[in-house]
Length: 309
Ligand SMILES: C[S@@+](CC[C@H](N)C(=O)[O-])C[C@H]1O[C@@H](n2cnc3c(N)ncnc32)[C@H](O)[C@@H]1O
Image 1 (cartoon, rainbow, N blue to C red):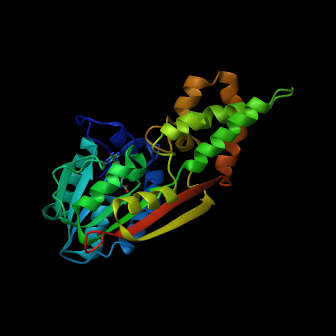
Image 2: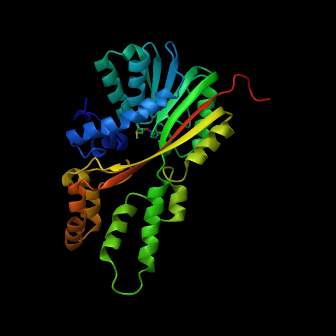
Image 3: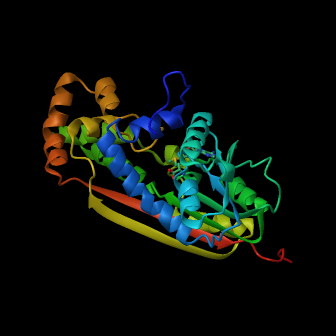
């Protein structure tokens, strides 16, 4: 099940999840799916799920966590929520295809306002790479706490992207410090690429929901919302890049709000700059020696059985 049908409306989320995340390359798409599957397993491992429970999947996307929960635990009900109507429709089609529609509900909701989901009605809240995009994370955690039954669990996995923005800021600082000739022209191109995808000033970082929080903030949000038994694990994996094909490398972007490298080269580089950039970057990509770093925060916590006194 790939891509929107031509007659279907798309949005930034469906455009990214179904196309730009993998540069529209079916082979790389499979590699991405395999790579993200482990995040869903880790979320479910820590979620204390048993048959008969009702799960709420926040920012469900293609239903990675929701459908895997049904596969693993059988008779569970899952409410898939997402702000993206096209992604919800896409997930609905997958549910039909998998013959699990009777176990699923689909609701277009933002994590920070789960109106329509009753207080204390959910056994487990799960989320994978969704809360990172929510601007008001305090409100989101308050909503998770509100909808959970006493004793219910939350289990989430969120990317920590602060370091990407930090490195982009370092590039900016180094360029600003390059007063004496000869300047390194590649540094400027690298910064132009990275700063088109991540904020490169303190002020812009503070405004960006994807980089203005750390794993410690997630712990604090859970604590402030009233959760107990809060447990945080930060996994950092530095691995060979999955992308060794130059045209795929050009077509992908790291998150939905970031343009692809192809777009950046087209819009912000002169022909000579493009040539220099390709000459310097392409051999590393194609040699398979490029590395990527994943930083993923896994948080699980419990709503107390009795309200705090
Ligand atoms: C990176 S995708 C992850 C999808 C899925 N959880 C997975 O693991 O593959 C992020 C999803 O969160 C949704 N999303 C973004 N902002 C949201 C918000 N404020 N509330 C709920 N969902 C949101 C997007 O529409 C998208 O489907």
